[in-house]
Length: 477
Image 1 (cartoon, rainbow, N blue to C red):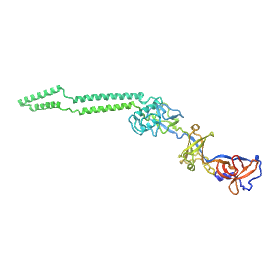
Image 2: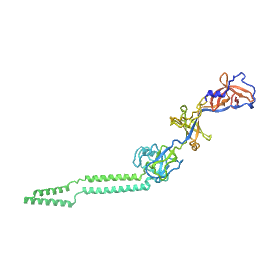
Image 3: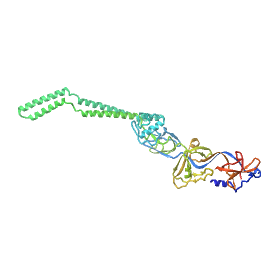
Image 4: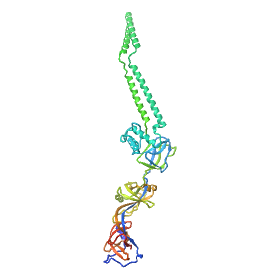
């Protein structure tokens, strides 16, 4: 109801401010009066909202395995705690902007490594240099600390991890044996010829030369004898030449590189690793389990549970004009179903998809000397996007048990401090214009006092006039 409408409803007819301004004494027992009060008077708007934990989100498992432990609905899980278990092993909640998409191990680099290190550091674990995107030994130690913080065995120390370490160590041993064998082969190929080999080669040359002489004397078989002598001579010369051990040297190099690779693999096996099957990254420091979809003994693949945020806040639909009058950071009061009131702060005024028309605003949106306009009631079912106000409440203990309940958000758009306040029904319209109230003296006299009207809110009005002060009684016509 606007200012003029309020004042018109509060006055019937009009009176003239006379010279004496005093009427005949009245029997105060038959007259309704009100006491002039002094205090704060606030005008604003009332909005109907709902206490909520926000959007319900689905959480799906990854990989293979069997669900062996699940949280109960209503469970609150903070970052660093266990959400559920698969094959008897924990799946942790960590805070991060994006989920892990691969298993991370010693030596890996990337944005996902940086996200992991940031999440672990936020829990107080030492990750070394948190600004680098390298999964190093400090990161491995931090992962181990995450497991031990909840009484769980780190991955590398489980039976599966221990076997992986043993297999990696065996690979190192095998590679080292290969190096030893390759080096022996190289040594054998590159050393001087044995005395026996030299003696045999010399003897072969002598025998071939004698055969050539015999063939020449006989005049037959000379070409064949000459070829045999050439071959024997070449073989003897080869014993004095530097041997070609290129292949043998390459074999040694390859074997050494294999040792380095297997040692690196052993280091990875000894260090911790973490992947999508062990960590769930959510953009939340803590969550509340809304409902559980998976079942014990069932596969981890598919939807496991649904969750919400931990903070209970107010959502209230507003009109476009109300949205324009609301600023982020505005302090408001939230009236609870019990009648209690808690303070709140406007944190956003955004839009949401159209509702089914069940909620809306029901309060004043006026300010100054005018009363608030009527609320919009339920929203329309058009499905169009509409403004929604979010109010955060510090006193979570007061509102958390009331999630889902309707509340009233009271927003002050104008406040008069130390105002003289009377009911609007005490106002009289003056024939010459303006307003007055009828002051009732202690003797029962009624005095007409011209007043200046200020802020109007909740059927009360701020007035100023001669002779008005706290405790004075005014007549209610």
